[in-house]
Image 1 (tube, helix red, strand yellow):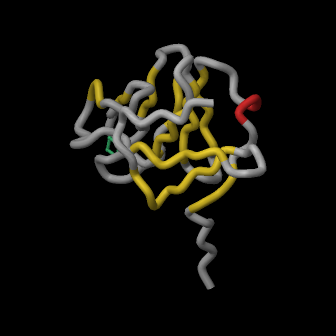
Image 2 (spheres, helix red, strand yellow):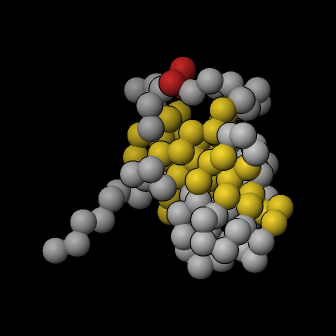
Image 3 (tube, helix red, strand yellow):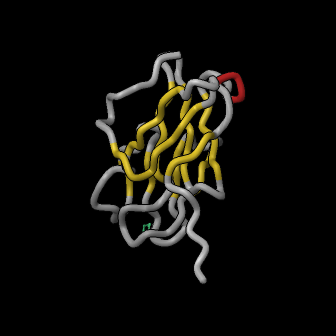
Length: 115
Ligand code: FES
């Protein structure tokens, strides 16, 4: 039997994430990005061949270890062979005050959850 992690999940409350932070959630394979404007969530799966990217705070970039693609915190590719940006995922505030991410629901890159 295969274990499939849920596509829709809570990732904690907004105060868990400092302003101007990029948090990698390894189990869910996403980034939660908080800016002064609010929250976005990015898929951590590289759009080249599907390796899992990693956040490199010293470079202020998301980097893929496989073939060198690099993305900024908006998911825009800045280097390497990846053909597309990292997808932005739906992030909403659930009634219990937690952030709720839906990996099956991609949203436009300019859609920000204001809190
Ligand atoms: S899989 Fe990420 S650069 Fe190739």
